[in-house]
Image 1 (cartoon, rainbow, N blue to C red):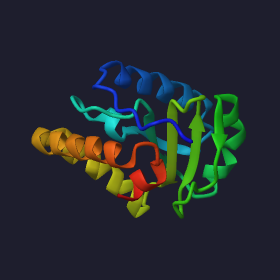
Image 2 (cartoon, rainbow, N blue to C red; image 1 turned 90 degrees about the vertical axis):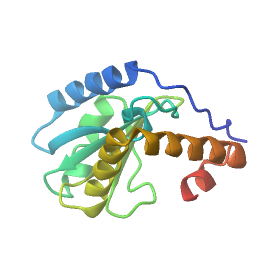
Image 3 (cartoon, rainbow, N blue to C red; image 1 turned 120 degrees about the vertical axis):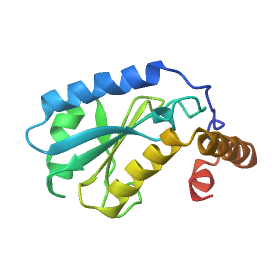
Image 4 (cartoon, rainbow, N blue to C red; image 1 turned 135 degrees about the horizontal axis):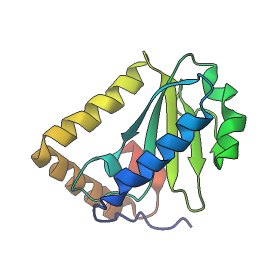
Length: 152
């Protein structure tokens, strides 16, 4: 049985954790990454989240998502293919997981959608709190079933 879904109150250090990781990733970058963004709930000030830093990477081309696997491994990231989302290159770090990296070509619709969602919640605090309430409800309903949590 998996551990229960644990939402942590907002922690302002999440931004610094992302920034540290962004710098490390950019140092390892050999032209693969056009941009590195903090996304997901830890990127939304004031809301509770699973304490996992989600990182969105804009790739120069799709092949670069796999080409950087050795460099990412040196940074502690495990390559997980598309992780069930076509077009994505997915990496994770830590046990338990502390960081998730989602890579797409910059022109991929999912890349743009994640940035729009983050920016919308950042600029609409009431909606961000509603989103947090939804997450809390889902955490109770699905307890430890993260697959159903993601699908809801």
